[in-house]
Length: 412
Image 1 (cartoon, rainbow, N blue to C red):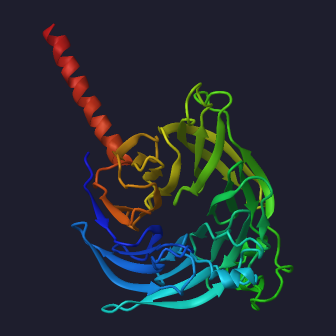
Image 2 (image 1 turned 180 degrees about the vertical axis):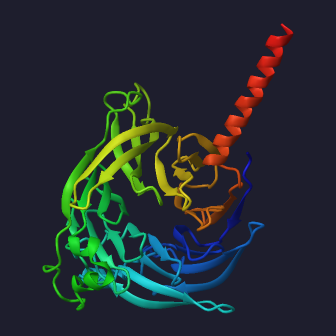
Image 3 (image 1 turned 90 degrees about the vertical axis):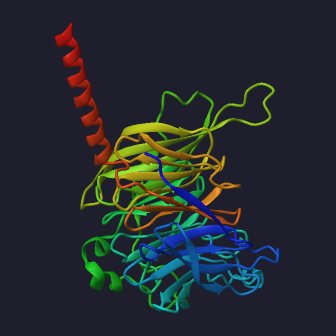
């Protein structure tokens, strides 16, 4: 079934992050970054119409020399977002970086961004590091924010740490996903599974606040540790040749099936003789997991599918759990059936440069992609697209085929 899609040019606004705060309101972060390119770094609020129109309702211009918003998570009920924005270079050189920032988007007729709070989570010394991930827990109690080698779990309400930071010595951090009992951290070399402290798993909001450091300047040495309970290495896949370089790129829990996790791996094939570059591939992996209240965790690979002849740059799971969307380094955009990993849609050259942001809206009826080509593409998801609708269609087709064969056999 064909999906309608439209591209909207956003002059001088390369897009690096986005998130929905309602079914038709999208916040996008972008700009020229920390470089002195003259392109201002901003947050923008857009309204998306059913006819795939895009209207800018408000914007928030960041201070001079601050970085672009590189990652973003949104809480729909409160119309708030948390995003990663590095402070100006002069502050970074002093070891001052208010990289994690929380905004509200208020108003009905006249929208406005309001800064609610900040938190520095990146260790001083590396002025090139940035907050590459911002992930909200399903109950909106916590937000996980991560840089290249460090992840911090914060209270979403106060941005105060609720656990000691996780330091990764092997590989780079790319993604994270949170369940009620565990945090799964996707690094380039493996998936690291951490059990949440008991006070955060069972105690609810009141006990959670007891684990929070209220003073932003208090050293993070009193909260509980996130205990590493499982390490999932890259599994062997028969279609990946020996000598290939394989890295994890993303990990996401299914929004309603708590025992289902999707991960993405990028593959760099051995370079052929006389070839200038190595060919790339990407796979989606489907894991069946079991998480116990005592922190124990197990995982079994249930399925995999090669989905592109290029590296994946971004990944999302629809809120209704039926669809998986991905952006590829060859500028294409794809959608899979989350149940059987079957391809449903491919848009070649969806952008002029690799896709940097990708999000479904809350009803799973729209998919938005953004890129550094200063554009946003809106894809309308057909009602009968993926999930059970496709299963019903296949059953109907098989039934019709059976009737036709029966008629042919009777005539014979």
